Length: 305
Length: 276
Image (tube, rainbow over all chains, first blue to last red; front, side, top):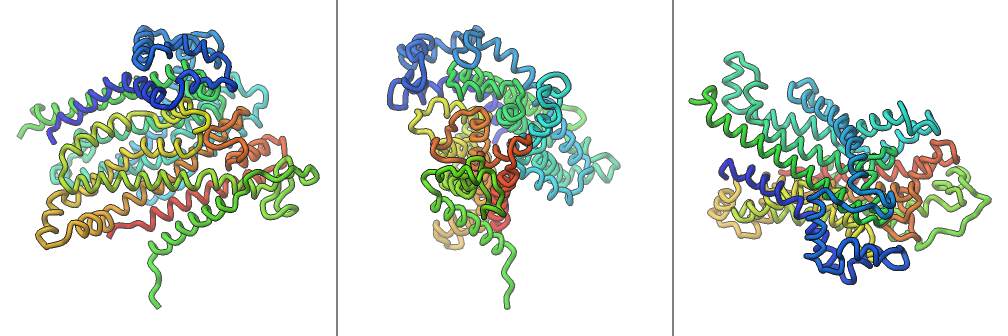
């Protein structure tokens, strides 16, 4: 396969993702039997079916709904929440929750990056793999509920502000960075990529010349490592929904969960779209890395034969 | 006497746990027993085997109902992943270029989505009477399938891909023997079994997580009906016990043991499936 096919597919996927997510939701809504407004807000279980129908152009058919929502979203207008925080613009809710979630995800990447670095530098012995795997078997929800109980017991009613609130974020980051095999896959995934590369002849020759493995192998393993890192960020984003709710952190995950439970369609659609934009951006970053490395390997005078 | 191989022991351990879960789900009562307020929150020593909840209902019933909620969807999700991984491995062995390109596009699109976000969107748009763990589990399996398919295809590639098939054809082997015995059984089964077991385990943990979150907000879960109770209820009782609200540490212990049993099953199946 030519080197440019994978990055090209990633770029195409990144551009299409924000259009595909609302299209998928639209397709599912209209593929299901019954009236879309009544599916989202079943009469008898929920009030405001008619208001929902008007607000989201559900009477205009799938294309009318999709186009109206997408054009508004591209202008930053996601409408107003009608259940989670009645009357508040959804964009405002998103802007409040995104920084909190970004902090959780950023901090959760710390153990993962340290694990990857340790594996790349050979600091973590292979004998420790069983330990990482054992820790990784713990589901995020269990670790999160134990931590949530600890914070509640220690700080009681004061646990939602100040240091206890920060502690909740730190503990969420620990859960996301360690549970569900996050740390184990970072350590073992990075090591396996490096081990494969170290077997290559050019690395062995470099070792004989007295050069380091890392400086020689890194350009070639970087695309694979960036790909692994992207899937780990996605894993963390996914897990953040559970961990934020259990630990009571007002982030994007909690907003999405509340939107789903309370059937706030506008909030869920906007949050889902936000996640798809983020995923698309990460795909683009990976594609840029791959193209950059491919260019370096092909055109750098240092690596020209 | 010939000693059984370790892989065989793991296999039977995993199958044994799966069978036990199936028996539990078959034995699960339709509804919980009538509350017995004289036996509220008592431990296993007073009410064997697992004690009772704050209403005096035996925790064993929660364990059985929880098994019924998760067993079939988890097995179906595992089988779905096994099927997808098998198809990807066979297509790579057959040298189908168009399939590889299609697989990459599919992997990029589906793999780029945070799974739980998609699950929540699906949970929102699926009609109330369709809600259950099976559709959620299948969507989860679909979202997890790119990884499994990629790994199975890469394993088939390392085997030699189309050249391996050509070589075996030259030996006069039948298509069935080449694809299903040599490729799937002898070489891909490790990947297939591991991925299937992992996804089955993830579906169980997903159910526990979603039910726990719903219960913590006093909302109905979209993975089971209101009449049944998930293993998440045990964990929730345990959480209240840690907070000191009720003496229900035995519920937490039971919940953790059940989670551990599922994790053990997945590990055992994984360990048993070593490629020749």
